[in-house]
Image (spheres, rainbow, N blue to C red):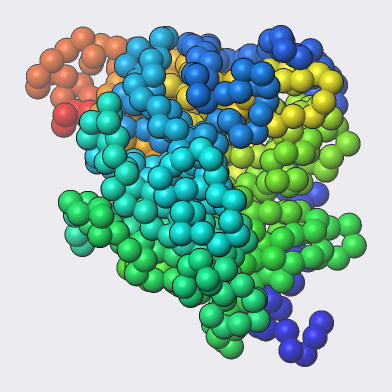
Length: 591
């Protein structure tokens, strides 16, 4: 250990060693080897210009819709230049990014989605967000053009090139208009919308650039050298957007969120490389791949190549790093998700960059997985790992990727994309013991060669799971009840409705008062023996009788049930859940 090592880096090394020692004890993989062999996902037949075999459990596929014209290459369906990417949602519309542009789908009838608009505008993965009548699109590749042209840009330096964030006015979907283009030095691989807590007319955009720095002769102020204090590395850009005048959008800050607070050195976090013998080779922390903000708690979680970080975003134009962790099992910190109560954070590791087969039986189960942390007093503490439990083939790119919470009250449940590993729904209520609830998987898109395909993203939105399949199209699923998830829990999740969903802008889930929410807690208490079976049956009968009443009679009946639950909590092995159920019964009585 060098005497010139920064205090932040020294702490990172110490934490890395502790994480490595804990990994074997904490890692939880549902099922043993025999169970994996019996998993219907194992050994699915692949396609080659024909559909692949499929496996599904505890889900129902509502629809599959192929990519439309102009968004795929008919002579080569696995052409990376037409890959589907990330999703955003507004009303009954799904905004689907693609390396060729943006598709906007109407899912008013999820069984038959219809294409509302298609915007051909290449320039990278087209990470997309929506806010009111504006659409934001990330552009990173050097072929991106200000005019959205498909001819690319040949010159090394050109005033026709665009790399940054596009803003479209989508008030009229028949004629979407590009109203602003904000150039950045490294382009925009992804971005995050952050509403101004003091001004509803303003939204900020955190820009995560991961590509090379463009020359200063193309964009003034862009410095490539990592040794120059003005370098475009080791920072993010923040754009301020007046919603009523988006053409005035501009960069207002470029915070050095990786700086060492003791020395001020801008390269203050993980320097890149291995953590010791037998560990992962982790990327240098000079960028963030994704930043997920949770304004309700004033925090953000940044997945920043070599580190996971926590940011204070109460002043969104000036975020401050408050904590950071390393993990010797992570190659590239990719994305993050908070639990709804803000007490847990899931970070994903995109080992192999998304294009490699990292879910084979021979691969380490802690690598290319999710790391599950408790967030206690503003500090991240490793609790466990979760990786897709079904081994995939050498022809399937597979690693942890994008997902979101499913709003089941009383539990932490997530749906997540695993590229050609399919999608997995899992419970992380106990982060040391996550387990799978449901899945869908296809065999390799090409049984002869490794090709980029599978689910880029899978998100819950207003009662359904929507998946972006890179080489195929758009999938929509519904959850089915099982021994892991009751119909009441599904109904309670479906009762949560939102007008808009941008995955990197996490909003607090609020459930309407309902019998489904109350019964969800009762089902959970029955599942974990938090109430004796006879008592559970009696409460269920009381709830059914109360549901048939109205007015003051219903209120009185529900309050009696709540009082009984208060007494039950004193002797329950899951008192917190019983008390939560009692609170929901009282809330229902007041509704």
